[in-house]
Each structure stands twice: as C-alpha cells, then as structure tokens.
Image (cartoon, rainbow, N blue to C red; front, side, top):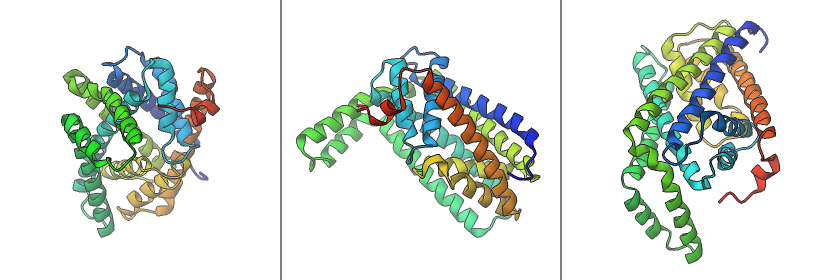
Length: 294
C-alpha cells in the first residue's frame, strides 16, 4: 500500500462497519419467521463467518457462521444454512443489476471485459433462476432430486432428503412481502456502502474513476469472492480491481494498489472482529472446525 493516503483508512473502515451492521440486520429479518433473535445477537456470528473466510478455503466460513448462529438462535443447522442461501439470492440480484448498469454506461469496453461481464451475468442469472425455482416449486424440486439420487445407499439418500426438508424452513422468509421488501432495500444499501469502500480505496491511491467503473469492480469482486477459492479471497479482489481499471484504459498498477488497500483493511477488520466475537461466544475454533454440524 505504499503511496496510499492513510487518512482514507478512517472513512473506509466506517463504511465497512456500516456494511456489516446492515448485513446483520438483513439476516435478522430473514430469520424472523423462525426466530426472534436480535440484530446484536447475530453480529458475532456474522463476524465469525467473515473472519473464518480469511482463514479457511472454499467459503467454509459460512459453516462457522451457521454454527455460531445455532448457538444464538437454537435453530437447527439446515434452516440457518438455507437462510444464507436466501441472502445470496438478494446479493446476486443487486450485483447483477450493478453489472448491467455498469456495462450499459461504459461507452467503450475491451472485448474481453464485455464478454466476461456478459458470461458472468448469465451464470449469475442462471443461479438466481435456479434458486427462485426451488423456492416456488420446493416440493417438485425435492421430489425430482429424490428420484435423481436413487443410486445412493438408501440410508444416505434418506438422510440427505431429511436434511433438505428440515432446511426448507429457512425459505419461509420469501413468503412474506414485508420481509422481501426490507431484505431488498437493505441489500441495495449494504452494497452501496461497499461501493463507497471501493471508491475510497481508489481515491487513496490517486485513481479517479467514474461511477460505472466502481460498479463494475463491485460486481467483479463480489462474484469472484462468492466462488469457492483460496482462503482470504486471495486473487479475487485483485482481479476485480485490475480488470475494472483496465476497462477504462487506466493504470493496472493503481488498480492493484487499491485492491491491496481494500484487501488489507477488509481482512484486518474481519479477523479482529471475528476473533473478538469468538472469544465472547461459547464456541471455540476447534468446535467450529470439528463438530458434526447436522
């Protein structure tokens, strides 16, 4: 981060903390049909999950988050896990909109950026469609899945279907108009704060970019970090920033510098708050990584 303006750390961290709080409140709303848990009770599990994602590969921090939430909500593992899938649905909807707006606002983009953006958009749209289908046709999807896994041992297939049926309770939030409205609004607001973080990180290294580039970087880093990768989202943030900067013929070195600024503060905040939350919970790191969760 050599050459970065250290004063930018304060607004960046402030925006990031607001993002965490709004994200926690949205999760509380999504869990409200099943639990009356309060936002402050979920903040710890959220930060444990973020902190764990900087240590564990393949997004396994979400498993740690789910287990920590089990301790606070007294809900089974699968409904909580399904509520996190619902979170992803809202995230993908907002990010897909950001990507579409960005691509439409750029006058000229390198061919590979447009192709990549459209390809990613198609994948995200397919994921959203699959999740919506599961919500609307839950029984039919489960019945089809049960027929698909007939080749598995009877006990195994029965256990899989039993857990999925338990998990369906986590989709109850999608049947409430109020929950849908609040979750949708908070999803937009929370990602707006991450867009501000991106703008601050670029400004910190002297890069001036239009809003559509910020939206492009936002879409790329969120999509990239949603894919199971190495611990700490290593490479995902850097690729998003560099591709976004190159899309406007900017300096990729500045993009890399801004990504490091973003990554370091993001990681430090998540790890510090995650460890603090874990210390004040009844769980231990060993519990989160060895317990049979289901």
